[in-house]
Amino acid sequence: MKTVNDFSFANKKALIRVDFNVPLNDAFQITDDTRMRAAIPTIQKILNDGGSCILMSHLGRPKEGPAEKYSLKHLVQHLSNLLGGVEVAFATDCVGTAAEEATAKLGPGQVLLLENLRFHKQEEKGDETFAGALAKLGDIYVNDAFGTAHRAHASTAVIAKFFPGNKCFGFVLSGELASVDKVLHGAEKPFTAIMGGAKVSDKIVILEQLIKKADNIIIGGGMAFTFVKALGGNIGKSLFEEDRIPNALNILETAKQLGVNIYIPLDAVCADNFSNDANRQTCKTSAIPDGWMGLDIGPETEALYAKVIGESKTILWNGPMGVFEMENFAHGTQAAAHAIVEATSKGAYSLIGGGDSVAAINKYHLGEKVSYVSTGGGALLEYIEAGTLPGVEAVNS
Image (cartoon, rainbow, N blue to C red; front, side):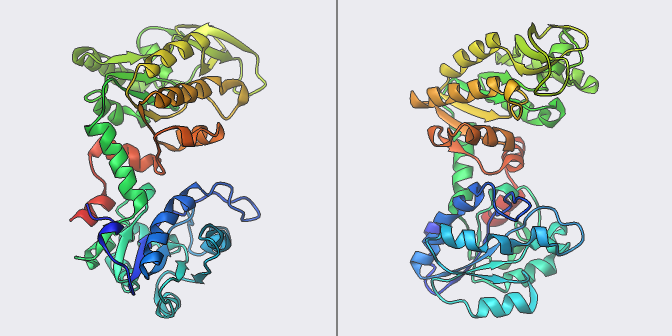
């Protein structure tokens, strides 16, 4: 695997695919700059070498070409601040005259941000001509966007063929791959995977893969009730997927055959309505009264899960334990986060991956107390499922 450390960028223009798909409020202010901050070491390495950086990214999901709310121009000043005051130039398009003239002016130590790649439909279609137009802008291609590496888009996979000997990974992407590989292929035992979220259907393939590798699988979130229902429990009006009951039973049977422990919530904090202000009671997950729904794991489950996590040497967390966006149903997710932090402090390796898990770990300001926080939810899951990604293959080939 070639990284930016394998190249000298002196007098070279690095064309870097970054993931600057950050949330903006109605005033176009960045509300979470995690992904931007993650890219800074790669950019600074290239600038310190005496190279220049041409940054390309998407932002949001524009449907019909350019749109003010999806313009990357809103990121320019903040990026400059993150780079310690380095001036960031902006090109009003990512290909064509505007981009080519802006890159022609770029000298060593300078940074250029291109306009949103997805203002061109050819980006998501993986169009080779579009990829070629982007490739004309730089000397060395750097993919540092793990969050989009599972997409076979023009800027993430197709473009690499135009740089046969001059392509590599940035620190974000290489770090992500190293952390996932450590969990999947070099995990110190016991290895515990914590899977949460709303639906079993979103996690079937990853669960099938993890059963082959993990010692313990902890289930939380709405998806747990499909397992409870499959085992004959009464779950009231809790979320579950009727058509996924056979999958749940198959996962439980496979785990049993392989000697993998699967932990399903014993109790739940239940509500009579999907609202933070709903009436609440703690119930056994197999005996939830009609008209009530489980929205968080209960105290008995919290204690059990904390014990399993505490005895683990490797931990993968993907998905919350409950509806943590509502304060009254956030305790289980917070308890899991603190248990992971405590295990990490005692020497366990912990990888936090998936949008909601990352949001939770950041909400409780615990990101610095775990081993690694992944920047790519979908990409992480797909890498675990498939063992590779289009954006990774393109650079490695």
